Length: 165
Image (tube, rainbow, N blue to C red; front, side, top):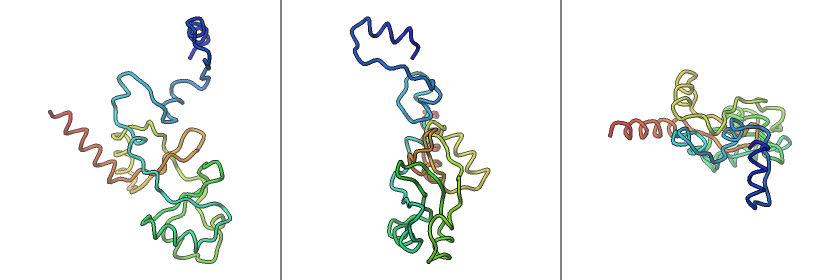
C-alpha cells in the first residue's frame, strides 16, 4: 500500500500497518489473496498439489526414488531448507542413477510458474509444450506445489461450463 494509505489507516487507529513495497503484481504472484475482477479468474495456485515429493541436494537417489514411487509421483522437486526449488528429478533419472546423489543428477533451475497464472493460460502453455506437470513457486522461488495437466484441463472445463450457463 502507499505511504499515504498507511498513514490514513494509522490515523483510524490501526496499530500494525505495513507498506508492501514489492507491489500488487508480486502480491498476486505470491498467491496471496486479493479482490476485484481478476480475483474471480481461476488460477493454478488454487489447484496446485502440495503433496509433490521433495528431496535435498545430498540425498541418495535410491531413497528419493523409493519415496517418489510410494507417493505415486513420476517427478521429484529438489529444494533447500527454505523450500526454494533448486532442481527437478524425473522417473527416468531416478531409475537410472541409483547410487548417485540428487545434486549430481538433477536438472537444475527448472521452469516454474506463479500461483496467479490463470488456468486458461496454463492449459495453453502445457498443450503447446506437451507438459504433464509444472512446478508452482512464489516469485522468491519457494515451492507452492505442482500443477498437473489433468487438473488444469478439469478446471478449464469447469470454467467453460460455468460460462455456458
